[in-house]
Length: 226
Image 1 (tube, rainbow, N blue to C red):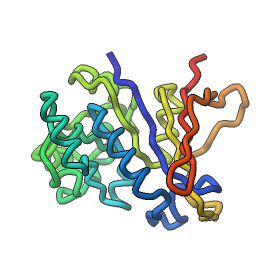
Image 2: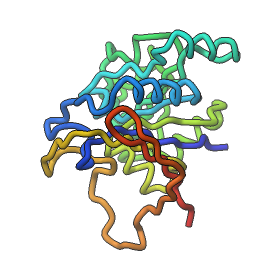
Image 3: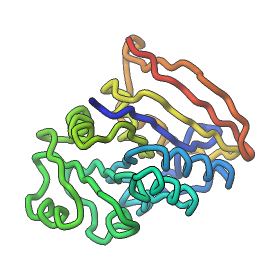
Image 4: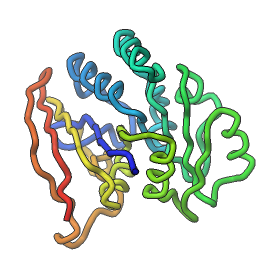
């Protein structure tokens, strides 16, 4: 069984995830940070793309000691399984996601990845090879499901999120919209890449909830299945 895929992003009022230089910007506040930590703690795994790893060096750990303790009381590791979608095996060996906090890490690569880099990553993470030229997200979910992972939180970036949506693999989307305007036609958005040309290919959503948080608003969407 594939895990349920829950996308979570914070964006500016004009729909940007960061600046055009991919520089991380504080979009939400403490209340939303706590919400994201709770969402992460409730999932079996959390995933990002290699672009996010190289730009932001996230650890993807659960920050709250209380939430970590709660996971342990439930018989789960302190932190969710941390997953990097990294077609060419470019994850640095000293990346925070590999060295901070206990728990399993998974790196998903394509067949085009440098074998030497793949072997180096195997010393710190389980490596999944899925896809010839780029990572096949569907196959990655199948592999994660076989590992017992039932829920996967996807934190970015825009290219990875677009990949999950395009493949029909996203189930829920949380979008926090903050009270700033970043601007720039080259700044990343929720769904980067080539986009969709035909209206019939657009992803359709159902609004499940709206909540005011900090100085912005949180929209919770369910992805329609065709």
